[in-house]
Length: 205
Image: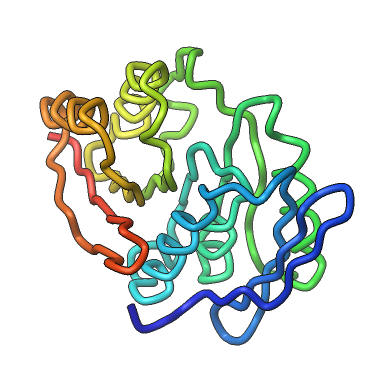
């Protein structure tokens, strides 16, 4: 990976606050309830997007299970029109992080929105989405069926590309990918060997 996303500062008050250096020597501030490992998957995905910006530049991008929204915000900084999504309970931190990073970026297009995987999504709701991002969203077995339904809805237009950063750690993860292969062509397009994180590209069959 040529373009690294580096941690500049980290501090803890009521919440964890981290500042990351990204593309064009700009920076992003992340606000978290705790320093969870999920953000490292977002860092790897963000680095990949910086090195392959043609995949998202000028396109409509939706991030699933955004957490801190790092990958989505990198996409916005690279010129994508972005929706970062989370469940209702996770929205306060996601929204505040997006707002904290917005004042210095007058031209970026990004908004935070609730997307509940357990609820049906009409395909027309996100019919203009070109690319779907997900950082470490393959890890809770109980969510797998709902995640598959969401991805099926978002890729109703079969030209939509899905990019997932993940660790395939357990049999349940591999079983989920087998289930996905019934509906998607899945290709491993990158692996960060030092972090043991892969990036998968999914295209609807």
